[in-house]
Length: 336
Image (cartoon, rainbow, N blue to C red; front, top):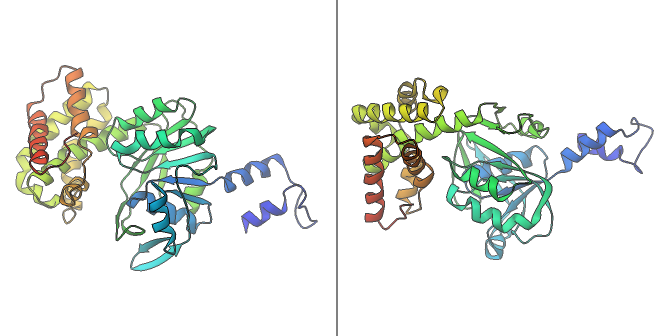
């Protein structure tokens, strides 16, 4: 209805039933009509795409190549399963070579794919492009921002749970929250209204780096151990001393890196997350179980590199990284 109202108020379409078209209306119409380009058809990318499409926002799903696009077009679109109810949305698919300029891009691929994926799209990015970076860990965000110095890069941290049931089908597994922020430009973007309309719980965070560091520490304390012990998150309750030791070292690292707020009560939150997600397998555990590359370089690797830069000796954290690298190599998986 709002889209039709905006169209009716466009110059050349005015009828006496609406007020004359104003500059504010033009801004509103531009925001509503700017497509959401989604890079990454994984669980979170698909979850955002379906909810935005459900709210009436124009969405474009960028797929790896023509073969993937043909596979996608052979179906009906993207399917969202929420509380046992499924709905399919005919989201438009395209490849990186499509000609349409990109003004708003959700980067939902893995951290290790982000730079190469952005390189493929660099020629399509409009001068005022905004990129929402939804990667795990730290390191990939700064690397992407350096690739596109004219674009605005907004960092995101999400606790939402979803998993794929096939390529074009996503199950919404757990309500969470997404924090977004831009440390260099604190003014929130107007398109946050799209997220509100799409039912994506979110907040604009002035402390986005603190949130990213906090999530990094949580992931470092939980994910690698679930891989090494081949257990669900709840299985770490049997390794409480090891978890506590890691949390102490991670808190020391956060303090040294200028993130005291991220270090506060870290062990208590790790315990809470382990209990709250006891039946779940961590994302890193799922990657290893499915013989996929992990994001170790952007989690443990990033933490250990930060410790080395500050000449911090964190023996348990460094030993954990060595154990995980050996574990991955023994199974023929990438260790970077």
